[in-house]
Length: 494
Ligand code: NAD
Image (cartoon, rainbow, N blue to C red; front, side, top):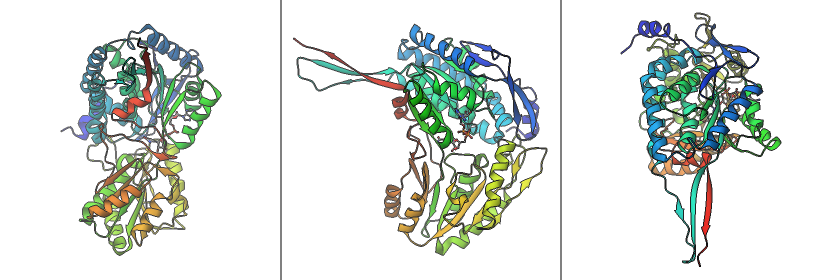
């Protein structure tokens, strides 16, 4: 088990890759432009990274298209793609400490999470898709006996993947793994706050045998590199994870360009509904705290709304507040830190704006203040009780460590309040009644319901939203639907 000192020492040995990865090589931006990426735990500049814009996206898409058309990957047998992707998964495992440190230094994620979840989880997901791809069969349609109609899945071509900063490596893998396994070529645009792990990933993949041009990574800003990718005439599919507002822009980019398919995984405002018959309120409080303060609350499915049946509301609120107050906020390189910083100064300011707006309308029961530490962007784990359901804090996605609690009187009201949101990504239900669990989970308009837990998630099950949380599905075999086109071939009989 590594200590804070061990991780700090290891962090000092990391040399970030800072140039775009296009057609199997690192390259500067054509005009030499760069941007700074900052360590949110210290506020210090971590690296100057190539600032990809239109010309770099053009080059990356051209490389992806050329590799796709050459057939070097798209026509490789599923077994061959599997062999290479398993080698990439092994390479990720071999570089797990480095990749974990890159996400911790670049995004402020706790090393306890990046080393135990993000890096090994990314390898496992890639391995799962590698192992799946040579087990996917096509269909034979029920035609007249003289004919034969076969339905096959084909790669769509060039996939543009745009990802946010909260799970930099893992969200990239959620897109890349099924896209590559299916035979596509990919241009990945990581978030400007966290470009480093994706650049190292591309280098590792090439060393493990992925052909040049099949995976390209262009770091840069959303309104530059992201927009250029969205508007590109030679991109076939966009797979986007990020905010709802930006997701909608990709729909617009598509309509203004080549009508490319767009898959959206967007924001959330997940409700956690606790009924008075929940078995163990201490366990529920532990889950509620984990559900909002993991990754400093910067999780799309964060359980940011806690709905509690009125008879237990005071007791559960106090248990949750006590746990929030007890969480240690600190250096994400410290494996014992309970919570790290927010990703950037701008995000800290944004979240503090929500906290300040909530103070006059709700009861602050934990936190609320910034934590002055080392120049980093830290905020106390914050809990508001008795939050009116028309308050901004109740309605908008905060994407920070701020929990809003409100009581309800009966099951129907709990369902109504939970569904009264423009988002529909996830929800949790705590109850000891299987009948209630079934009724409530069916009534919730969300992509994932976790019963007696929070944020249940696995590569084997699809993840995505309803309503304005998006409509694509990451993970599971269903993700292949995003990255394959169905082709029907008829053989006319005589
Ligand atoms: P964001 O929408 O600001 O950015 C996401 C990506 O889009 C980044 O790579 C960014 O550079 C790019 N982008 C930004 N503006 C753009 C533009 N005008 N044109 C093209 N690209 C642009 O989101 P964020 O702040 O990085 O991440 C937080 C958001 O992501 C939250 O809303 C969160 O809920 C969401 N998210 C959703 C999921 C999910 O699976 N549903 C997972 C993680 C995060």
